[in-house]
Length: 207
Image (cartoon, rainbow, N blue to C red):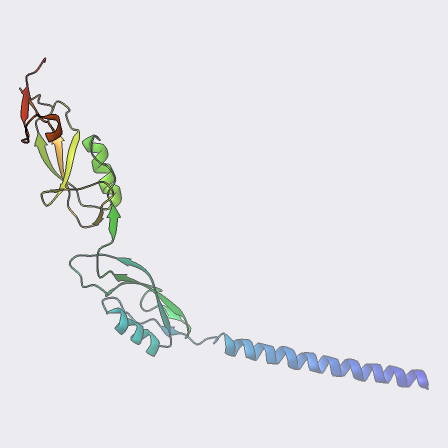
């Protein structure tokens, strides 16, 4: 009799545990469906071409967030305008999704100009291209060193190594043409002369 009662008690406990597990599993399933918004998605608004503040407002109204992850600079487009978005416009996403934006910068980024003097024109041009600067203008000057960059200018002003320049800056290279001048002009400093004036000496070839 006692053995029969024990088995009945154990069976009731097991049945109760089974019922509780079923309720837990079913409840967890419905909670996950609600938490992940299963089957509920909305289209991403097209915010390209909008100013960032307007784009952020449009995404917020759609239940989404925005983060600016990159910027580009396009001279003919207004600064602060959204240039690209991920996910793309029309993509179906769940509410609360973060949309990553790329905007057109208000000002061009700056680059540090390395020493380009005494390099070959091709090497200096490759460096300029790698920095993202426009192709340089070329001004040839008489020099026995052909295609050697003798000097670098911006708007007629010499550029020093290490200067920070907007990436839209157009450089001018003074490049040797390989023609040996009949005379070479040397300007001596004042402290090497007996007078206070600067003297220009012309040295003939072969001297």
